[in-house]
Amino acid sequence: MIWRADGLAEVLAALSRGFGSLVVQPVHGEPGKPAIRLLVRAVKGGRAPTKILAALMLADASGAPNCEVAAVLAGQGALALSAP
Image (cartoon, rainbow, N blue to C red; front, side, top):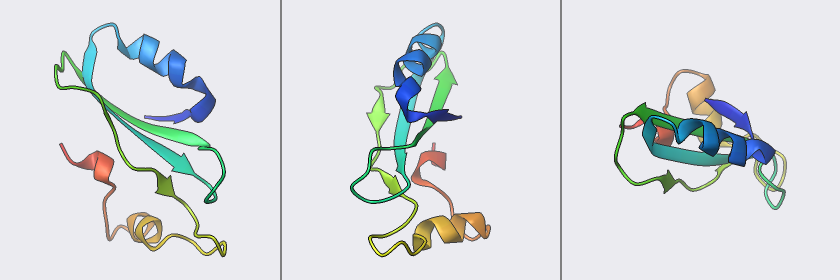
């Protein structure tokens, strides 16, 4: 799911009832700025420890789109979060 970064506590509380194996990836619009969104993956009944992945930057310091993000949007790549 995609969630607002300021709603992390809400997401974790909601998923604590029956879900586990959480993977969270912060998404930053610009380097050096707080995360704007969170990508969250959870498995019903999952028991693996929670993981927080490295942040995903949508743009580099010059404002140019991140190559990894551009590839995903073009259907030519996948986010780390999508791996099981």
